[in-house]
Every structure is written in structure tokens, then in C-alpha cells.
Image (cartoon, rainbow, N blue to C red; front, side, top):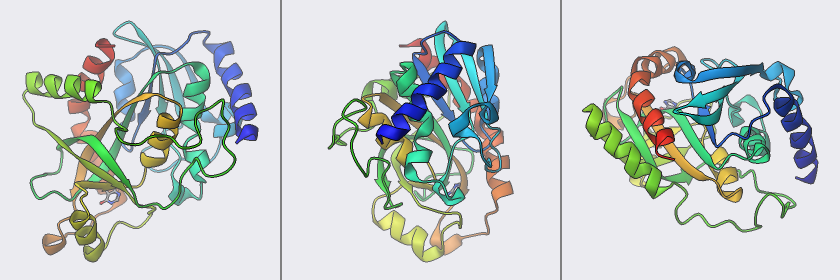
Amino acid sequence: MPEIASQIESTAKIVARHWPVVPQVGVILGTGLGSLAEQIAIETTLDYADLPLFSGEMAAGHRGRLVCGQLEGVPLIAFQGRFHLYQGCSPQQAALPVRLMQQLGVETLIILNAAGGLNPAYAVGDVMLIEDQINFMFANPLVGVNDEQLGPRFPDMSQPYSLRLAKVAISVARREGFRLHQGVYASMLGPTYETRAEYRMLRRLGADAVGMSTVPEVLAARHAGMRVLGLSIITNIGLPDALSETTGHDVVVAAEAAVEKLKPIVRGVVGSL
Ligand code: HPA
């Protein structure tokens, strides 16, 4: 961990050289959700290829770019592209965007993803506010020597997602006239989608949606003391008794179709800070 901290420090210096601003908010844009960055008044963009720790293969639907600018007058950085464990990344690598945010001074993380719906009330294109999470990756970015400067050895997880930010998100969705589900997000390693038996198990164990990201980043963000808002777009339905095939392409297309719902929420939450 101390080694990662020094690499992050030099990466943060590169960002600060191009954009000498302290961002208040960091956003991680999920699969097919990169177009959310269009609402930002962009001041600088940096390709991951120009950031030593961030170069590498990007997953489908991810662009690999850091967008720096303002939204609702609030300085913000958005990561168009994240690192997944299924790509062979370690949980520590998956948490790099959050560590960079921490180094730059970010206090609020907005994290977005595409997920399979397990709750029978959910439909493709719905949005779920993540109210809690289950780590089925059985990996944690905080394993190893703890760097006390980054956060405590044993971080509390009794309320990983901010209730205050959740309330703002719910009121924006109400105003915009769409239903915002609230549920539990379970993370799986992937890259396979789940079998019927796995979808059934996840539902029985209390999950409302399942995906292959987010949990490592949120663990690091809570370690860093950030407040977190998480939103999932339901891109496919994982009902074990009525399961149809899912492809990565279907997931990207469904996420792109539903992105308009996320825009007012992100804007409203950032504007409330
Ligand atoms: N399972 C896991 N990850 C996903 C899914 C799913 O059904 N849909 C989108 N990401």
C-alpha cells in the first residue's frame, strides 16, 4: 500500500499540472454511461494512457479518459472507464480511481454501474439507488499493510452509502417523474454472467441487483472517509425461472438507453453539495 500511495502521488501531480483545481466530487462512470460526461463544463481531459498507473486495456463500453471540469459550479473529475477484477486487475488496481480522487482532495464519490436485476419488481432501464452492498468477490482492496495516512485498519461499513445524498437522489427522481428503486448491490467476479442457480442464490441472500464492479471502489472510498452515492442501471433481468440470454452488447445498449435518467440525479446531487 505505501508503494501505491507514492505512485498515486506522482499521478496526482500530473493531473494537477494540467488542471490545478481541487475537485470536490469524483464520478466513476460505468458501462455505457460515458456520455454522462457531456453535462460537465469540461476544462481538461486526460487519457488514461498519459497516466502511468492507469494505462491498460479498457473493458467494452469504457473509454479510458479522465474528464476535469465543473458541474453546477462544483469542481469535479469523472473517470470514463474503470478497472474490473475480471480483467485480471487486483482489487487495489480497481480502487486506483478512488485513491487518485483521495489524493486530489475529493470528498464525495458518485459511482455508477450497469447491473442485472434480481428483484422481480425491476425492469430493464430502471434505476436502482444502491442502499447497501454484498461483497461476493471475496477480495478487498484493503488487504495488506494498512497505510494509516489513507485510512484506518478496520473501516466501519455500517452505512457505506450516504443517506443524505440518497435523499437528494430520491427527490430528484420524484420531480423527474420516474421511480428510483432502492436496493442491495452484490458484486461478482465475472466475467461470466450468472447461472440460474447463482441468480437464485443471490436473490435469496438479499441482493436486488448484481454486477462486476463498484464494491472494491466503495470499500476504498469508505476507507478514505468519502461520502458515497451509488446508482445502478438495470440492463438485464436475472429471474432464474424466466431467464433469457445476456450478452455484453445487450448490457451496453440498455445502459446507453437509460443514461438520461441518471443525468438529472447526478446534477441534482452535485448541486446540493
Ligand atoms: N450479472 C453481472 N454483472 C452484470 C449483469 C449481470 O446480470 N448485468 C450487467 N452487469
